[in-house]
Length: 325
Image 1 (cartoon, rainbow, N blue to C red):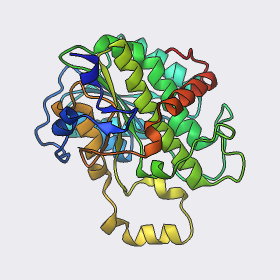
Image 2: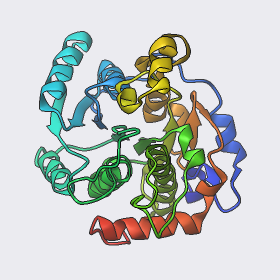
Image 3: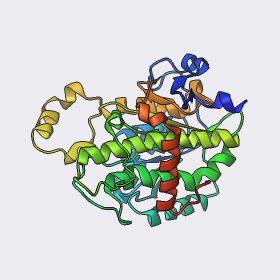
């Protein structure tokens, strides 16, 4: 398989390769035409609730060994119990990981590697939304720190295991959950932590744009080195989950009144993540942005290779990682 066939789009011109367009066209249908995943191992961040829970549950239903990574041990263990019961799959477990703490992330990876397991799938799903201005344990703005930086560090620390687990017949995958709000995001390198004129919506949008930039540049690096690992970003749509708990005023009232009618359920929202995680349509294909199971165009800004590279380099410094990882 050539390096070019492994990238979904030519990011330098933001155009799409026909072979990818043809292979990723149908809408994601949960449970439809998805193969068994026996013997495969996945980590799903934020897998105790919402989209992450239904993602973890469906992967377990298909026979995967699923590790739910989260920061609430009670919720995590309850989710494990429910999924084991409903899927009859005992290979579901919880691993503590607080994405707001680089120390916790490193500890999580150390604990995972102590199990001597392969890793065929990493789903970067967890996140916070519309928080009031707040800082992580390491001093980063909470949306940037949890949604983006935490997943950036986690992914990089697990890349060696992903590389060893992927093969020419079955690539390991990194699936990163972004959002349509990334279209409104901006990356200001003079104020990555949103210290001036803080806006919760602006900070959230920035973190989601950063995730798309990260996902694309990760694929760029993986393609250059010829690794059997792919990286894609997904948009679950507007989903009725607990992420809206920090929305107040008229927005909260409207969500309460109409959410059941206009918003996707968490299970429906998980469909594209599941599809991107295991569909044969995406075998060996990376650098895509998917919505409703269909490859679509992300924000023009997200295809800027120089911007991707600059953000990657700056983030490596924040996470104390070598820039070549």
